[in-house]
Image 1 (cartoon, each protein chain N blue to C red):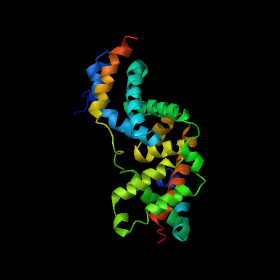
Image 2 (image 1 turned 135 degrees about the vertical axis):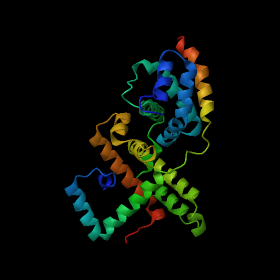
Image 3 (image 1 turned 120 degrees about the vertical axis):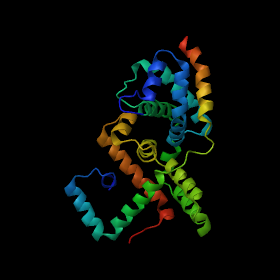
Image 4 (image 1 turned 90 degrees about the vertical axis):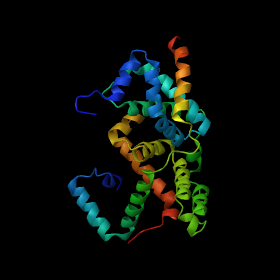
Length: 70
Length: 194
């Protein structure tokens, strides 16, 4: 099912999956919820409390000479 | 940018390789958000993720000479981040997710979150919190597969390279992670059998 959603199934396997989910409400339900879930995962915002990228860059920049000279 | 123009990132990488720390800081600024987000979702808390994100870039600076430009810089950084996160997580003992995975508490907690009323359910932010919580319940390897493929948007080929396994093994982790996540979210998502 995962490979089907990723478009990674060969055409015969894909056809079988489409036929089966067309006939089986249980599997169709699983497929639908998976599809919805993947849609939401793909648009999740960044985790809360993230530091500014520029702050990380400045902190890393400050550490480089020390490591460079070691 | 026109065909034949140098890729700005390649230019920054070349300058950083020659010792230009300002160029490297630009690369850090461009990639820090994604690295930090991936570290959080691999299982680190905010403070750890910030520390480790810095460490990832310091390691990248040291290893720039070995970076193969055939790979994308972001994929290489995810790989360093994944390894650093694993190192941190392994110091903690058995991950909470693996201890609780078979228990009912986590699932019930998510189900409770779905019972806050139709108005609350309609809020994207609430669902996002539930989704993040469910994600944190997955075993580390399955979670990493979902994070890299479904949240960070890497290809299967790149994501399997990040975690250092063959594509078939990665796909298996991804499938298990997705199915477990769907199962945890089922009380919230509900069935759409039609």
